[in-house]
Amino acid sequence: MLRVHFTGLDLARLRLAGDPDALWETVLSLHRLRDKQGESIFGDWRAETRGRLNGETRLLAPLVPPRGYFPDFLTPPEAGLGLDAGLQALRETPGDRVHRELGRLPTVRTLPAWIRSMAEGDDRAVARLTGALASYHEAAIAPYWPHIQAQIEADRAVRGRALLDGGADALLSSLPPMMRWRAPVLEADYPVDRDVHLDGRGLLLIPSFFCRRTPVTYADPDLTPVLVYPARHASEAAPAVAAPPRSLGKLVGHTRSAVLGSIGGGCTTSELARRVGVSAASASQHAGVLREAGLVLTLRHGSAVMHTLTPLGAALLRGGATVRRAPQVPERSTTASM
Image 1 (cartoon, one colour):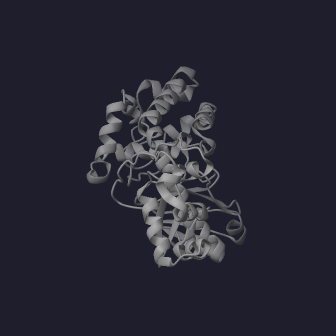
Image 2: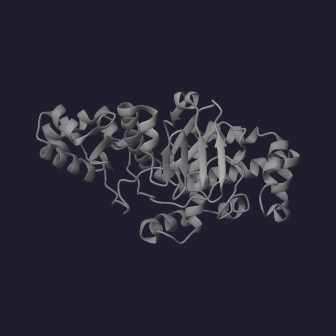
Image 3: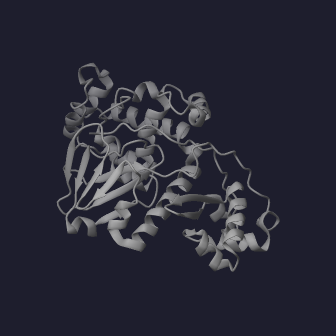
């Protein structure tokens, strides 16, 4: 079990990441690619991704074992700003840190020579690693990025509503069931028994599309505290790929256009009904049609449901219907730094 210990200052410094983290998603997706679980959900994604790969998995596998620890330097916080920023931060990782973290791998004695040479400051080895990560991301993550963003935004809407309704206490209580808030400690299912003391540094919560079953955190307790947790999914089944409509007017009409425009940063069905001036049943029906068209995501939160816009829905409202909705890559495995 993982136990994260909060102080009052930590609760005040609790944060929720604004966007998917490019390198956390990249690294965690490697687990899902290699396991055999969730074939009905991940089968198409695995087949499509493997068809685009060109040896990247073989290069990265020694650094990211199927289970257990992987080096913290693979997921620098700068990756929250995008893949390029994350890879640049990875390139600048000090050699002594690379050496220390590689030494924690149970397979350190059998690591390929090019990986061991990174700890000695070999720029060519680092370039090989960042190149493999970039190529893997292009094959496995980039084609699905709009859908990943939509899922993360939907999860953020649920967490944000909890925060607005009840503060940090309610936000922590709203996290997935493998995490349990028992103030002042957040308990979580975890592969090993571990305590993390925040000591006033706060905590960054990162919802992740590819994180499953247990949350993930850095192994090094001196790094800025983060907790990557499984984002909620609108469905356990992969949705059909919907082609974007030729025009918003032809697709939705007046009422559904009003529904789409009223969702904003997220709202419940009853709130949506009040904003549009229709019954709750009518609001739910219109939201369902928009959801089937790939414009809206709906997640259940307690007894209510929360509606949010997908990137395509937001683009149509802006008048730029150029976003293609990608296939889903649902549920994935979690092996974590520990």
